[in-house]
Image (tube, rainbow, N blue to C red; front, side):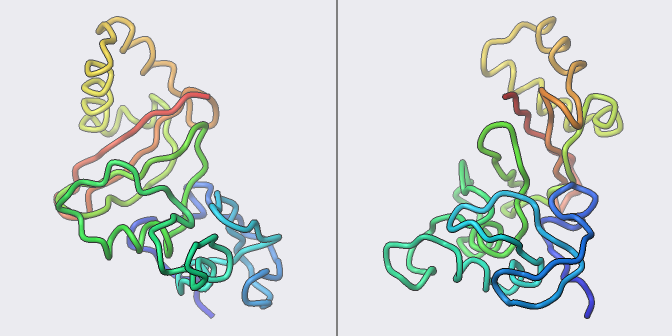
Length: 187
C-alpha cells in the first residue's frame, strides 16, 4: 500500500516528523513501514502510522474531547491552531490540526498561513538552509523588529540558526504564490 500524501506536510520523512521503520500502529493494528514521531496532543500512542493520521482515525482514537466523539471541539491533535488568519476556512484548520503530521519544536510549534490557506511545512532550517529562501529571512527580520530587536542582534541571531539545534527556524511554502515563510524557535 502506498504511503499517504499530505497537502500541508509534503514530506514527513525529510522534515523529521516520520521515520522509516517497521512497526505496528497502535490505532489500526497494522504492520507499517513509516512511523510518525512528531507531537500528539491527546492520548499518547505507542506507535502511530501516517495512514491513521491522514484518515483522521488517529485524531478520533487519541484526542481528548469534552464531547466524547473527538470532533465536537477544535482541540488540536497534531498541531496547534494559533494565530489563524480570519480568511482561512475552518476546514483547512481541521485538516492541519487533525489529519496532517505535525512537527516537534522547542516551544509550542505554530503552523503558518498565507493567501487564505495553510502553508506547506518543509522542515526545520538553519541559516545556511534559509539563505536559499530570502523571503523567509525577510519574514524573520520583520518578526524581530516587531519584538524590538536591533538589526545587529537580529543578524547575529539569524546567523546562529541551526537546523538540528537551537535556535532553529521552521520553513514553510505558500501553496498558492510559492512565497517562502519561516518562524523561529528557541528552547
